[in-house]
Image (cartoon, rainbow over all chains, first blue to last red; front, side, top):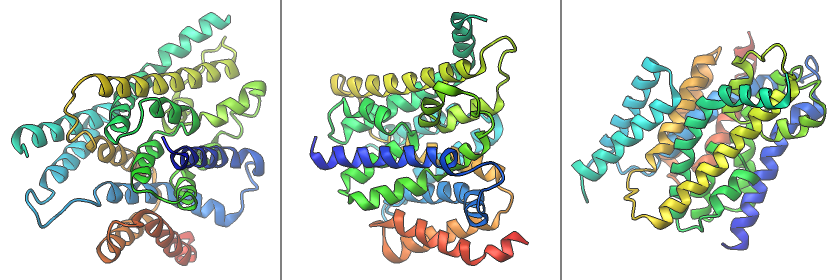
Length: 108
Length: 227
């Protein structure tokens, strides 16, 4: 493990603590500045959507299997989640499905 | 209610998180060793960072050799939802005394979900009850990721396709956030901005550019969205 790895983790850790402490240090319930409240209100779902796109950024759409297993897995996760509303089941079901497709149906 | 009884009640309440962290934590540990890092990095990250989605993300950033300033900025935006959690817990954490620093440090998505949906048993000491829940949740996470990493080192597990756990995790978090969102416009801003960045710039620096672009567009539409 290099120093860069250790430093990176420590920085991610310090910033995570910082965003968690932030409201307790600076805000009382009704004193949150308007711009912050606006950003904080809208940002979380936006970040998650960006992360979804990030997690599939390396798919090669023009090469077989054209990202179809990933898209199928994402549809399954969404369907499971809307149906059962159980995060664990959605993540587990989608991942097992995807691994089965990749390892059994499309062995490289 | 004595501490032992409070602990048992907290344990019962935390069982859904135990199951969830067991699965996602083991997958995380497997991915850490799969990416070529030593096994102890998995539990170490669970102590230093303790934010599941960010830890998954960090493996990718480390493999890509991302710079420290960029990691700091990405962590800030990705975990900014924890600030929102904190704002809504200002009152609840108000009287937690000596437990407060730990409760703030260990506030994950799942712990937040428990705190905001649970009824604290009437006779229980509320701060102590919260403390036990947080402590249990973190120990599940750290143990599960260590377990996954050690299993990955010892057993010849075919982890091909396991990285989909990250896609699934982000999907679920996104669906939960979308359900709660008041306005759908920011969702489209984020979708269009990130797809545009990916098409125009490719996967390198994707995350930080998409985040900054989305925030810029969001600020641009502030007046319209607030009407």
